[in-house]
Image 1: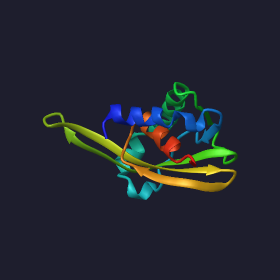
Image 2: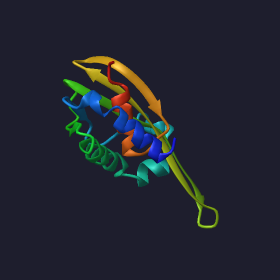
Image 3: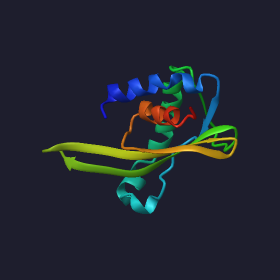
Image 4: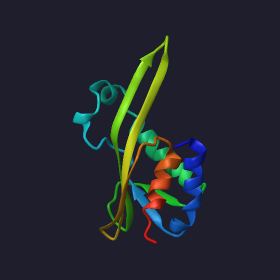
Length: 134
């Protein structure tokens, strides 16, 4: 999915959470570190924090309040990195990517769950919004 398409999807669902605060982790965790290459886990120490902060900033542009406190109360999104890859070299170029999953909870009940092969904050925001109950 192209970045523009992801961003468009995010804004399409913007009204779903216009009045709700969405809680997320301060740092988006790996779902299972054992399934991720150990070099990525040991070298990419800030990726979860950067993703969480970027998601909060992107959400604010869509009038969605994201609170990075890790609280599992009210409306919260359980977002996790499910896989990551880093390949290539200086001669052929570098390729990096990850997949994330998100589950939306409202008052402790899972409302929806979606996987995404996206890495952009807008994609995470789109996941949160797409999970919103109709």
